[in-house]
Length: 497
Image (tube, rainbow, N blue to C red; front, side, top):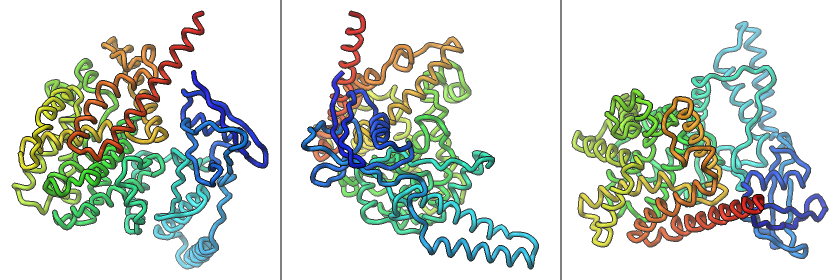
């Protein structure tokens, strides 16, 4: 196992940290938090000798005592960001108003309760961060996941329905706020860090994608209908380790980025672009966390309903069009019947293409077409749209390692949950899902080598601009996990001797 030594200055002390190549980003951050003698919710920043901000991750470059980094505790605790006087004044006025109403009416009206709740929520968010950017949240690049504010002692846990309604209220409340140009541009790149955003904020960013691609005016989509549609999509993703709403957002965001990077808007019709983005959004709706092989072997209702033919993907399509059948959520309601038919048919094809059992079939078709690809050829465009959704679906390794690696942990957790259930029920267990047979690096090296690289390489031949954006990062990921796998084998051999 290869190790690296990092020298850094913290609190006036010159320290050093040593960690192996198999450390996760979270482990490295915990190491530096321990050196700074702070807790898990403290926000740290690392600077190089030139004052540039470094990403605290296993990819930090080793250095010497003469070129030490500087580690700074940006926020020493949840209360370190002071409250603006305007917020204190608002809270005081609300309290005064509540007292006055209580005298006259004898109870607090619902609207005042709602205002008090919003102020309290906003205060908690301010306490969690150093300063604010657009829609009230500073996104710190060194943090993978937003710190969760622990509930007050004795406070009841919210039900799923109550949590969703909280997200809905927050989404509608912040949806009218201006998203900065910087965030909009960053949203168009594969390096976008999904872990920094809450559900309501991700919904706002999805709204930005639809508006910035000019779908609302082109297809006469009312903003409120789009918001209802996005919220219903959110509600139909389950709280499972991997195939959840955050995954849905990541896939849609990657699709959005690819659309801009390849300038697809000038090569395909606007309807085709809408089909791809909406397919990415809906591609895993109501995923139960157990794959098609499990559905078929366990003879579930889904497998019986769809005759063992892509049961999950067929279900995702059905749920998507169930949402669109509601008038208040139907973003396609102002289209002609011919346009609706085209979008429905395109979405079904794109979502069904995400069944990995069809991977080689679709990739081989694209390989044949790619050298003579014609954007005016209907069959060629159809296969390309499937490829674009497939690439977006399995694109985590094209992202920076500190973004991608937590997703692998989530995926393995879902795999292990399935294999544990299969063992209990006496069903066949796939080796790549068996916690007793698979390791973190081994799960990725073969997947990257035999699935990702061939797929991404073919798409890059058609769009050479994507090499630096998705192909090179995947090659680096293969090298990273290969080194990790090699180190694990060497360690195993050493133990045996």
